[in-house]
Image (tube, rainbow, N blue to C red; front, side, top):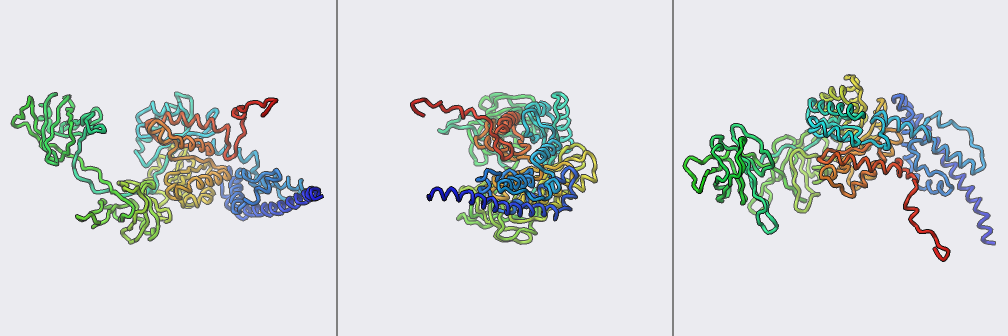
Length: 638
């Protein structure tokens, strides 16, 4: 009897659940529709190709202002969509669920404005618009792969046609030129090599140019002592396995070493001409240790000498030439210029670093005889404007997050930073390394004077302009203004999101960028990880993928993809998985490296495999061979 009553109550409970869901989702739909009406001016301002997408983005933002986690399992229990794949067609998804709920309730669906009246993004048009916008931005997809591959060009690509040809042949779809490096002449030669490779291979490739932007970096450091160390290679027992190789060249017309050298020394040419293989050069090094070099080869450009002992040479070190065991009078010369050693600041937890407004050369800390700090280490920064916006208590990171600290004191001309994050033995901070203030909002210009100058070349030659450090809608509007002034090819705009401020303002920037006909977003995960915190990066990049899909805007997945493969020739296991995750974007970017051609080949293979298993965040249920691996059951057992 008790069992029968439980069965009788189930339909009543289901009916109540359906009615509750109908009430909640009807109210939610009205809220979403009102959002697009309230922001109609933002939709109307978009380019005609993006108006429906702008509307869908507004619907998605309204949807995600609510916590839907309690609602989702209730929908799933009824066999309905839990709204987890609504990004590209928000209102259409809600309408489909509402229609199913009305049928379950046995009610006719009341008349309401069709989603086509508010936003025509549906299950077919939403994904199709994303595909269309991707083709317009990045070019048509290669056969068998829907995710494009972008590759950052090294300077060598200006004169190495074979490199550009091989990259294009292996699957590169977009070249990226970083305007922070080189000059218009070099950029032009890279593009010329690309056009030649396109004609040879019968393929097309887009050109993306990355504006340098207001990069905040450490200033110069005072040079270290002018001393040159030569050191032979030794095994674990201290035995010499290879002598130190020293290249001697004429100081009047110095020539580079024809092969790798441990050191190069400039000496008078008339003295150099006397040297022959088998000669000996003796000297007292900077420690007053007696050392010698053995001449092993003499060429028209210079001589090679070797040493089996470590030595330290400074300017004016005297070299004495001997032959057959004799030194000979008049055969002594002084070493010419010895370059100063590159300086670095070694910083450990607890150290104080003074960041100066003026770009005076920085110096390491000075210590007394007991090792106590007399004067803390100092270094300048390249953008003095940040000193107006940073406050005591703000975190600061250096060199892509390798060193971190907190601002203890902020004055008009200096910031006192207490180091809190560094390896126990300390880390070296060098000149021209990145600085991040995640909690500050520095009033930096969206486009530097150099960017505006570079835009003249970009507008004429590029298909895509990448706006570095995009922070708010005003930055986007400023770029659009300059591009309109220049005319030319009217390149597409890609917003590089690499700061916390840029991430937090992404929806507003997207709506501003969608006034242009072609738009994209790059998830620049290097600085972004430092700005948002490494542990939050995975969450942040997911949110950006969702927001951009709702706007039908293509995404470029960037920074450190297959980096060890590109640089060293062998990938790590973790970066293979990371590259596979890039399938959820519309493009994956590789950085330059000695093995970048192999990295393109591997990435092409990974992306082709993954597209059979994943479409954005939706698993694709391709037949699995592994599912056939279970032996068939036998009559006598399983």
